[in-house]
Length: 152
Image (cartoon, rainbow, N blue to C red; front, side, top):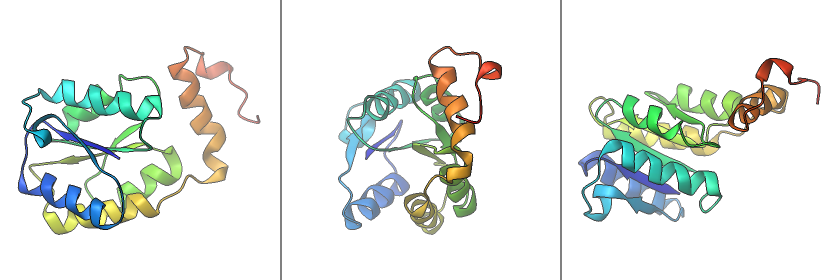
């Protein structure tokens, strides 16, 4: 799992360690490796790793979480979701097949970050939502989503 942030904080450290303790290989990016990086560049780096299939999923942070969400979602194949609680994370996986979890450094306490990670990791896409998720994937490929047959 690629993980990145525009700054290294206690929350980023807690999440990286928490994921590692669950047996997940964590690939840090940007300031988490000691390399200064703007939030847009970190989001692009993590997004490209996820979109290429080099890693299965990603986790991003920035002060509000909004900037890295926007930037990551510019990478074709990325479905980044800003999650402030466990239920939002669970829904992002279930209904959107989100592949990058984004959290706010400003408003995510450590305990909540762990709960969000658990919900994210437990979540699986709902098969009933796959036609809609396919519409979103087709948008990355330049298809007109209104022309996509949802019954495929």
